[in-house]
Amino acid sequence: MIKAEDSSSPPPPPMASIDRSLHALGFQYTLISPGKLTGRLKVTETCCQPFDVLNGGVSALVAESVASLGAYVASGFRRVAGVQLCTNHVKAALLGEEVEAEAKPIQVGGAIQIRKIDPSPSGSKALLSTSKVTLFCYRQAPHATKDKDYAETIKKYARL
Image 1 (spheres, rainbow, N blue to C red):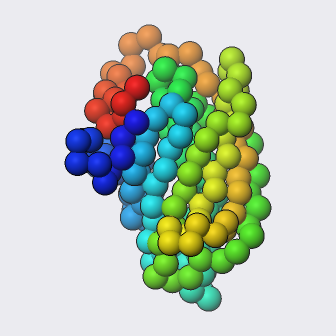
Image 2 (cartoon, rainbow, N blue to C red):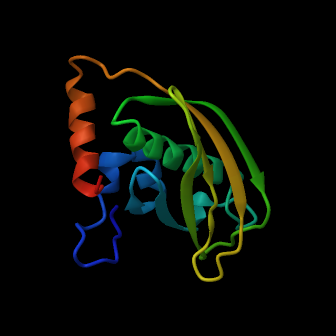
């Protein structure tokens, strides 16, 4: 496990090398482990609907991305692909607020991993939305240099 605020742990991972989409939104992982992932996002104009609330599509993007990284780590660094995503929005997050995403496995199978994501404001921890993500884990590509480089980047920031 890695916690960004723990001085004995490595610094938070450079987001651009882990997830370009989340990096563009300002998301930052705070914990990466096979059993749990967490991260934070400040709600900016880039993430909002025209009414200054977090766009539900951003919540879905965070959910699938965080679940996919969790499945990637938990599966021993095998490629994963989302095959189903279901998100329910409960409350709104407003422009300027910070939200936290947490992913934990509900069920881990041989090929499919399902993770639940609960983004919530970091202060009160009020539930904003829940997502169920179904992922398919592929076999590792035999000579994929890019896969190996990505795995090594993740391993630097996760204690396994």
